[in-house]
Figure 1 (cartoon, one colour):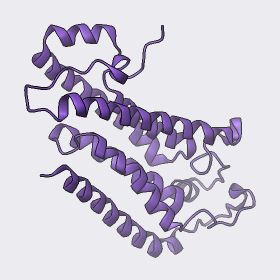
Figure 2 (cartoon, rainbow, N blue to C red; figure 1 turned 45 degrees about the vertical axis):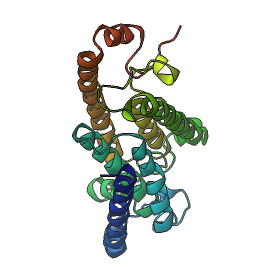
Figure 3 (cartoon, one colour; figure 1 turned 180 degrees about the vertical axis):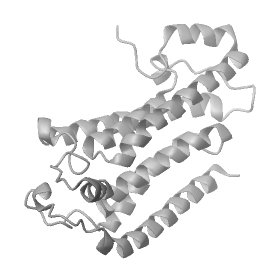
Figure 4 (cartoon, rainbow, N blue to C red; figure 1 turned 60 degrees about the horizontal axis):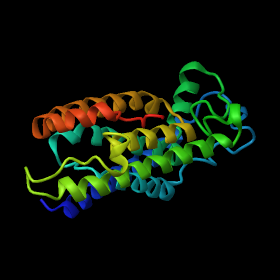
Amino acid sequence: MDRKLLVALVIAVIAVVTVVTLAIGLFTLPLLTPPVDISSAWRGRAMYEMVGQWGSMIIWALLFVLFIAFVPFYRESQQRPSSTYLAFIVASAFEMFGLPLSVYIVTWTVGVTLPEGILWGNTLKLYVGHWGEYVGVVMILIGALFIIFGWKEIYKQYWSKEKGTGKLVTDGIYAFVRHPQYTGFILITLGLIAIWATIPLLIMWPILGLLYYRLAKKEEKEMEKEFGNEYIEYKRTTSMFIPKLG
């Protein structure tokens, strides 16, 4: 199937999921009003000031979903991590702009108020103020660069070639890490947590990291079979995800 068509299909699926989520949110919002007063948790803001921004939710989700186009998500080995990444993005967008389900759940079950930074709002505000948001944005931008520059090298020298004719990519960003795109996805999702942490994100992030680690190990075995000692030597001089210092 054509790559562009696959990208379009992924975007269409996310759009459908987002629309369904919107419909569910509109019908369930009146039912989720906590039985206790949580106005203090919002520090003077109206209860619903930060919910129901469905247009922003869709744009936010689609913006981050587009990064999937920079990996061969159509391969069977990529489906689990890519699906988990998509679920992470939808969950992030839904709680940030749709409904803050995490704070509702905690309020319903425990009956305590939560200050900004605890399962809603700027995660690091209690510690570093709005600098926490800047930290998250920087992590997202660095992650995006890892993904884009990684794709640029691997597509030009390997993915675009016929099977068995591609070369081992060791230059560019691959001179520093063996899996820059997976590093990018881990950084982007961690950056989103730094901006707005929720229960689903905190659960999914370690799972996502584990999936990319297992995928990287599997791909490295395949590369060793294809390139032999050349890849083994490349592994010896580079790290898997985090660039070596010095």
